[in-house]
Amino acid sequence: MVDLTRRFDVLVIGGGNAALCAAISARRAGASVLVLEGAPKFYRGGNTRHTRNMRCAHDAATEILTGPYTEEEFWKDLLLVTGGQTDEELARFMIHESKDILNWIVEQGVRWQPSLGGTLSLGRTNSFFLGGGRAMLNALYRTAEELGVDILYDAEVIDLNIEDGMFLSAQLKQPVGGRTEVRASTLVAAAGGFEANIEWLKEYWGEAADNFLIRGTPFNRGAILKMLLAKGVQEIGDPTQCHAVAIDARAPKFDGGIITRHDSVVFGIVVNKHAARFYDEGEDIWPKRYAIWGRLVAAQPDQIAYIIFDSTVVTSFMPTLFPPIAGATIAELAGKLELDATALEKTITDFNAAVQPGTFDHTILDDCRTEGITPAKTHWARRIETPPYLAYPVRPGITFTYLGTRVNKQSRMLMKDGRPSANMFAAGEIMAGNVLGKGYAAGIGMTIGSVFGRVAGREAAKNARN
Ligand SMILES: Cc1cc2nc3c(=O)[nH]c(=O)nc-3n(C[C@H](O)[C@H](O)[C@H](O)COP(=O)(O)OP(=O)(O)OC[C@H]3O[C@@H](n4cnc5c(N)ncnc54)[C@H](O)[C@@H]3O)c2cc1C
Image 1 (cartoon, protein in one colour):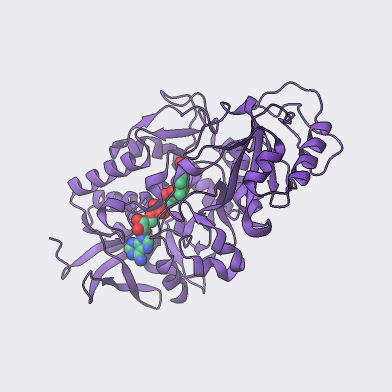
Image 2 (cartoon, rainbow, N blue to C red):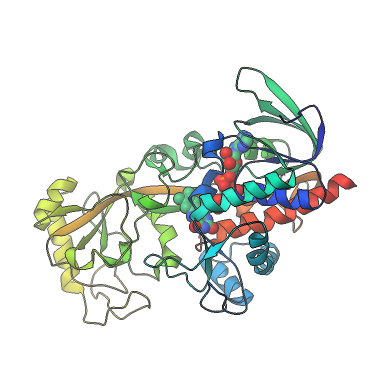
């Protein structure tokens, strides 16, 4: 039974990777720590439950990573995917610290395994969690409990008492009616983004947001973020920017997880509901481009699109939960997808006619390309001509949002007037916008949570002592 009448050194709001890294690090620094996880125990861990890997810099191959990934290369990758929209000081700090996280996270009980084949060719850059995100979380929870961190589930925070940039207490919603005040010397906000709050998404995306599917937890509704911004914390990031991928249109509204994501785009073409192509499916290698397809589909009529390919490539990518829809002819496939058959036949005929001879290799930017059509497919273009013809319907799958609280290198929140908060820190999705102005490279979400979570916990403990 957690004693809520006492005053804790560090209060952590959230129950995912960032929260647990913060809690463990604060506890190891000698602080008393309370974690408030809004979800029930079975669903603890937010979006972290769905993860598979983390991107960390390292100077040499390891038992599970196939070669070096230097800080400079990580930085260049981040620059490329964000188009320069990142806080260089914080990003370089995160990249530098990520080297140490590779070992630190193992010291907290997490185990690595070599890269999974078949999806994103990440064997050199990303370390995979043995057993996936849930196993990773279980290890962190076990370590936190063994260290004496207090953890409450079903513990949604519904209000924050903040005066002049100083956290005083949080209001906890109790399962039956009432509320309880929880006091602490410092706050670490690690309560995720606002991706599960469709009404909030609609403020920026309009009615289109009704057609979005949310890949992760329904508990990340952004309430803590909203309170912090309303109480004087400086915001960072464009509210329309998020990590969004193309996921199967048959996926559930929330929590469909990784098995609904389609990695087959580069092996075929993508058309909208008018059976028209709308973007270069072969622009760059998939790990650098998979995260743009959610936004691309979001911009199409009715937020629906179809990945079309033929029987020659079915075993080339990781299968998903949902089988492809098949047709013996293009017309039959179009009928099943409720697309105009003549339009789809023309799109595929034009595409096939534009394909140039080349040597296919999906691991490099190969020379298989189209000529004379718009948009071009600049790599991996091969004719779609061997029945059965196959398709996946896809919708925007929102992973997490980038609007967040501005922080400094201590993970300390900055107030609107530029002053650092007296005792409030943030880690994970809730401050991801400091590093990710836009775009994404696989595995950075967990890097942001681990690095800034660890720093936030340490600094919060230090702050509480003073
Ligand atoms: C399907 C999927 C796959 C992914 N795969 C990867 C991957 O392989 N690698 C990678 O780097 N990233 C991946 N991501 C992104 C990654 O999940 C996030 O970047 C990361 O988990 C964020 O950690 P976090 O601790 O900030 O948030 P979360 O893990 O989402 O935790 C937020 C927590 O806050 C709690 N909470 C919210 N509001 C309140 C409240 N008011 N009161 C109390 N608690 C509250 C939630 O219940 C939740 O426990 C994936 C995401 C999804 C959805």
